[in-house]
Length: 289
Image (cartoon, rainbow, N blue to C red):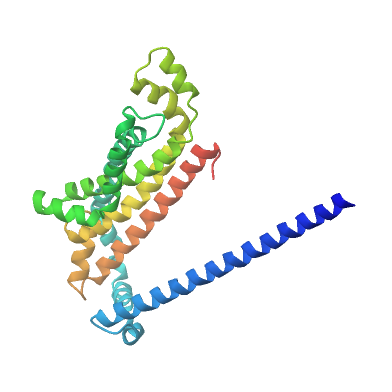
């Protein structure tokens, strides 16, 4: 009987501790929610006060510009196929920028990831250095890097490609390093025991384990880079974004061209998303989506 009473008392203590922990968690969550709402409201009010216009007053006009673009595109619908053909080379340039940047970023991201992963690094004492380099590459927006490079190199696709590649290196390096931390070290140790170099250990012992995940992340990043290369065109970095900026800046009379560019971008992103999704599914699960 004594054992039963002790067990019941222990169970009651556990239940009481659990209830107290749950109550404390709810209180903390409520406090965080209140703080978030307060910060959001204060930030919204500050942004609205500093804005050139008032959001509440201008919200009713939010669909005016799309209506103008679509209205002009509908009036010149017969010219849409010609515009699609005309801007297709610029779209190819945008895809080439994204592809080259993704390839370069993947190569450097893989190198930095392996050099900054515990148990795999060639120079363990330099792991923090390589991680900070990736942090810097990831922290600076592509558009800032592109603006600096355009000032140095002039306008064109090269500054956009370099800017996106730098940011891709930091982003993929972070993802790749997290994947590499979960690899089995037995193949690496076995290769090391027979005298393999660091590059041989990485190529034969690590890459086969992480290769599908690396390619999957690289394909996902390629989708992101297509959007980024289109955006960088607005600052003179070439590609279809540059053509879109010109079409929009001229205003009415060329909105049909802007609509054609939007259609090209939408179709490209949809196709790339579907193809890369199927490839990622095959790489990670061995079956088609």
